[in-house]
Image 1 (cartoon, one colour):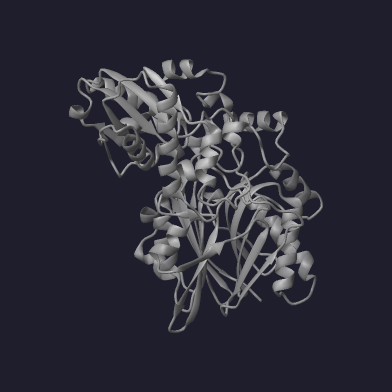
Image 2: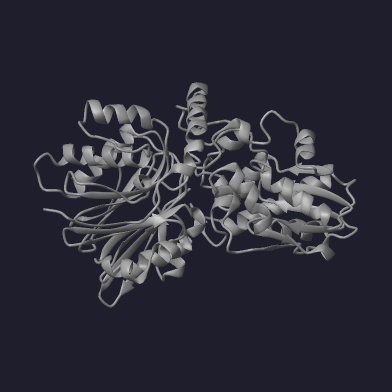
Length: 506
């Protein structure tokens, strides 16, 4: 669920890229990187940690040019910072290309073999983003084939990517001295939008994972990039777009609306905030139908993303809504931290209970979802330690029972608390007196109600249905084995920052 940004402006873009990454920090806190293009030269800086820690004034001064891309990394394999895998990634042929990617390729190993055997390209890391970069570079090289690059050849290259790559991918890339390209996989799983701003010097364009980046930087949202579509903005600011996939359909990841995206974003014409209000409304309806026997005194959200749902639920049920936990905003998002031990350590540092809101009360805690159960168990225990008489737990999302292979860090079944357990067993695992889950049908309707034109959603972590049609039990077993092998190596990964100035011949 990484954050990606691309800008083509009339002046320097370094500050725009930095500010956009700050707004998208919630999408990845493992590493950050910026590449700008000045004529035929790329300027790059990337490093581990939060955006504010990676970039200093001296780094920003070296990031020159009126075009650039940026990336906030979220490690989908559970590994910590690895310098070679931080994005954007670079390849020098043809022309010089840099690329930033959000998502996950499900046929990365097959493609890696094809690149080495047939395309004569070497992939140096375990990153599927490097595979994607080399596939695009090879397809562009074949499309150009000695001719001058133009929009037609770029779109032909993207069409080649769609033919070869499987899985989820939202991409921004730059071709040195030519322009910025952004495209989305044919299923539209991961989000990507673009906007523009009219300035006194001419039109400027910004591409980002979420619309909130456009809002805060003064760009007008034009629309989401369609599944299978590519857009191209050349160095002079000329805009082109084309559908590049032979078959395409919109299946946005429903977990974006549940947890991943900021509430002030819109994805595929759907307000994330309104979706979460709807989730609270339908969850309240379920409590009215099936849990009338619960003697609830107060509704308390688990900060932050569950607040809209908790407030709407409390309003519908006519119950007091209270803030019972104070969040330390200097601790990162627990769900996206690599390694279970790090997650366990961070929960108590992240939240502190206000004892008076719990003492001698029957408390309904509302969270957006329950994935591993680590945070839920700790929060229930904190409520009990603060004097709660009984603790009920409600999840605004259905049980997460299946791995996600499209760019979210939940790839192993033994890490998912709901896999193989009944609701009663899960309640006992998290030490709750009662556990209430949202129904999947209700969640889908909560999202679709805002934009009925979205035909379907990617719901694999809830339903076990993988829209790309290529995810088999053998594939899932391989992903889990790879994750178990990678986890012990996380502590040994490299550290440090990287600066590059790449001068490229046109």
